[in-house]
Image (tube, rainbow, N blue to C red):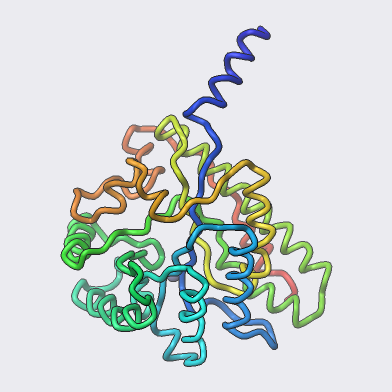
Length: 300
Ligand SMILES: [Zn+2]
């Protein structure tokens, strides 16, 4: 029995389950979610940039919706700061439409509208990375294939996502709790988020083990919001405590798993790891609790 356990331990620490890697990425630059009173978009970006630097995180892609610079012109400074700190910019469309509910020509025009802004701020770096708003790749396979062809013609790579933490649910309760000065509720909000981050990491590994039999370098989707900024040092510490090392989006995407996910000129793969399992007739593991009801009720 002891020998069997030792063997299992050896296998678990072998290549298949070596220390996991993760790439962080941020969506919705330069404007995401409500701001607490007295906090600016520049403050939020600076807090995230500082946390990435303190955590020695490799250059991190920020996917841009240009419309933010129309609604809040001073937020354009965020794009400059992001680049000046060595982080990178990519395309997330201009107005964040969902491909499934948008006709292709409108979506493509919205996508192209971002390019002059990216060209202006990217400073010669590679901004030809695209992330689908809402991670929505299209209403059906023909629409999905048509937009992938468009991406390929425009020389883009796709920034895939393999870990989400429902972080978009937190900026509103955070702003409400700060406005009330409810420090106990904020502590509770932090605890819920860290639990969700941990559950998200564990879920992704379990899913990958079930679908592929091994880890992939994971790609984490976060958004440039005030709560996410506030929590960045703790999120980075949590991943480090769980044995993760941080890699760039390019390094993660170089893993063979991502080949067809990242290269739109290749035939489209199953949309997610869940879909890989479903195609094999297997059920994916249970998704983490998103605590949505609890979050919506906080500090009301
Ligand atoms: Zn987005």
